[in-house]
Each structure stands twice: as C-alpha cells, then as structure tokens.
Image (tube, rainbow, N blue to C red; front, side):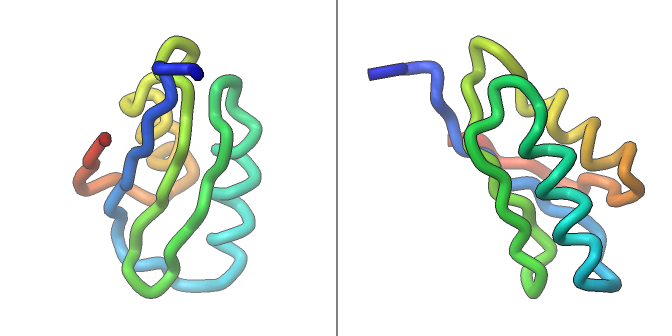
Length: 77
C-alpha cells in the first residue's frame, strides 16, 4: 500500500465551457504522480488523486491556475 496517495479538491472560478473539463483533466492527469483528475463542472471543483512523494498539491494548483482557472481554495485529505 502506497501511503503517499492523497486526494485534493481545488475550488476554482466558475467554468464557462465543457472544453475546460477536457483541458484541465488532460494537463493535470499527465503530471507525474497524478493518478486521476476529475473536473466537477457544476461545483467549480477539480478532484485529484496524487502521490505526494512525487508532486505536491500546490504544484497541481499552480498547473490549474496556469491554464487560466485560478484556484480559490484547496483541501487535501
């Protein structure tokens, strides 16, 4: 069992189009250490499972922000 696996939820500004989903899921999902990335369009959140020994929640948040979707808050479990 890998104890480095965490789940983070990032709150963003409202998404404006369905293509936002594909863009965020593709870019974040390809980051080393990320197991899955799921955009929750209606709640303006991005849920990411990741290995914290490889990538940090802050690095993931930075990636989302660089795509043009500012992260307003994050919660890591």
